[in-house]
Image 1 (cartoon, rainbow, N blue to C red):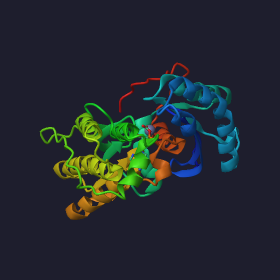
Image 2 (image 1 turned 30 degrees about the vertical axis):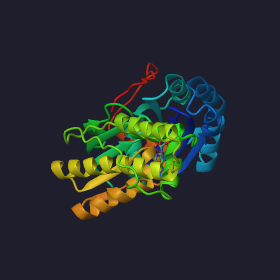
Image 3 (image 1 turned 120 degrees about the horizontal axis):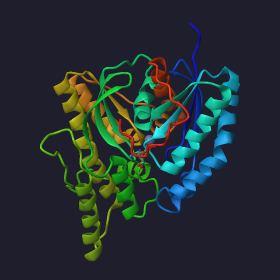
Image 4 (image 1 turned 60 degrees about the vertical axis):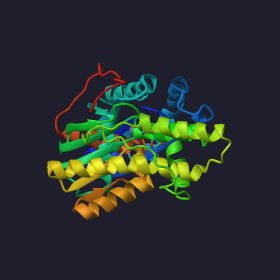
Length: 335
Ligand code: KG4
Ligand code: ZN
C-alpha cells in the first residue's frame, strides 16, 4: 500500500508548529516554535501578541518541517490543521495557512480538534496502542476523563467544572511569584518539599467523574495570605508538594475508578500536565495495584505540537473526513 504523508499545522495557543507524518504514526519532522519567553513577562499568554508571532513564524516553521522530513509539498497527501479549541486569532493563522496550502496544492483539508490531538500523541509514542481505553486529558485549558471507544469516537465521562488542572498549577505558581508556565516549576520545587506538610482539600464531587480545582486554588491562596498576615515563613517547596499531591490524588483515583467501573485495562495520559512527574508516578503505582496499564507520551508530545494533530488528522482522513474552504476556527470546540 502507498504511504500516506500528512502535513499538520498547530497554532491554537502559543506554539507555532508544523509536522510531517508517514502513515499517521511515524513522525518525519515535528518543528515547534514556542513563544513562551515572549509571554513570560505578562504572566500568561497575550492573545494578540500570540497571533502576530504565529504570522511571523509559520512560514519558517513550515519550511523547516519540510527540510527536516526531506520532502517537498508535492509529496504531501493531505493537510491536517487544528481548528479549535483555542485562541481565535491564533487558530486563524494556522487555519488560513493550511487552507491556502490545501487550495494551491489541491490536496484534501482535514480539520482537527486540538483535544483529540492530545489523546493521539499516545498513538505516536506507543506504536501498538489501539482503542478502546480510558484517557485522562490534563492541559492548561482542559481536564477531561474520556472513554476512547474507537479512533475518533469518544464518550466524555467527566470534565472540570471550573479551572483546568494546568491552569490551577499556573495560578498558584503565579501567586507565589514563581514564573510562567507554573506547572514545570511547581513540579520541580515539589521534589524538594513535603507533600504531607499542608492538608489542602480534595474535591471528589460525590464520587462522580467531574473535577473541580477552584476550591483547592482558593485554599492555597488563603493559606499564603494567612501566613503573610502572621509574618510566618512560607516554605514554597512544601506548598508546591502539598498542592500537587492534592491535584494528583484526585486525578489518578478518578482515572482508576473509571477504568475499573467501565472495564478497561489501559489508561493513557494526555496534555501538558501529563508531563508531571508526580502524576505519572502516582498513576503508575495505582495502575500496578489494579492491573491497569498506564501509558503516557514523552514530554515533547504532551505539550502542544503538530505531530499529535497530524496523527489525529490521519485517522480522520482515512475515515473519510474532508473539510472545505468554509472551515472556520471554533474557539470553544468540544471533543
Ligand atoms: O497541553 P498544553 O501544552 O496546552 C494546552 O492545550 O493547554 O498544556 C500546558 C499546561 C500548562 O498549564 C503547564 O503549566 C502545564 O501544562 N504543565 C505542567 C507540567 N508541564 C507542563 N503541569 C504540571 N507539571 C508539569 N511538569
Ligand atoms: Zn494543548
